[in-house]
Length: 465
Image (cartoon, one colour):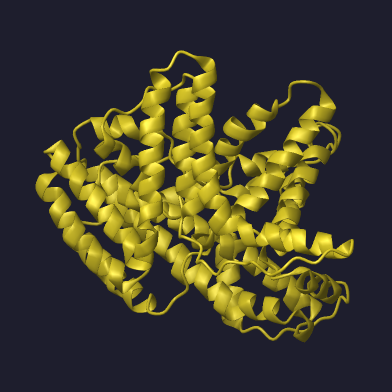
């Protein structure tokens, strides 16, 4: 089930009716949250709900065992079990075919042939997200930064909480479990803010991201040789904003839904294309994943301890594995390696120390680093990549795109780069000064508009990760 679907429009009011009828009774509230979350997930891939249950049960019992164990060796064994189960499931469903094919190619190069033993299992929706979420729980307990949750019901709600289950933000137990322990306090202002965020997210997804994909992105990436260099460049800009509006739109909806239910999720995007350096970009883009990779991978590898070489090594390993997290394909590996490279080159060397450039120039330069990186992210294979680069290098003019595409792209640029104060004033006019009857009518009208626009639209991009 996706947020921009008729199924969700039917599911949500029924769920909210049940939730609000019992939210003052914590245990019943938690049961409703758990059942609702599993129904939400099973509506798309019911057979894979068992994988979430396995991760939940394993990490719940491992966490409690680990917390009460004083022997460091046994604690490490418990941690290894948690890592093996969670990463093992992830590896089987997401990475087995990729690594098997890579091994097959490598062995064929030296004259050894092995049979085709690929599986045809569908990738479970959201597996990368909830796997990292449960792993952060056991890693925090192992490090002594978190006490284990004693209630299996509450821990199950933490793992399966449906607003962010399939595409984040990646929530940490230390931030979410204390909220489950407290009675739900519904605040009218926060409920209204949540509704506003849902509509903002739907606008980003349906009006900007999906239209950019329909009007330009899908076509130029399918057959780059059929388009001029100008159109290929515009298509690349379009994808840059498609993926941002698609993913940040999902995060806005997830955070808004959680607010309506009385829970606060962490911000996941902070206008990433106004970043002045690659490191600044990763403090603004997919913040929950960036923080996870920093705290549980980069620092575990040694971080910036041990000198320049080891710092650069740790950065590169972290970014390559971050690329692999997004998908089992060579283009994602190269995407991660590219980000690792520019993080290394701009770390106290190029942009942040030696180049005496103004803020606008830094933003312009960093933005185009990111535009190029999205080319690696979006291509279907390396032949697609070389065709796209070849087309760009011809410097040919002319366009096949409609004026509507340029209008949508201009709107995306405008929304992202205009100072936030402008939108604060606009929000005050649209959402604060309107009287409640008129405001309610606007919400209902927007809801039906989005329902109509949501028929047969693509799922969110990050559902595949």
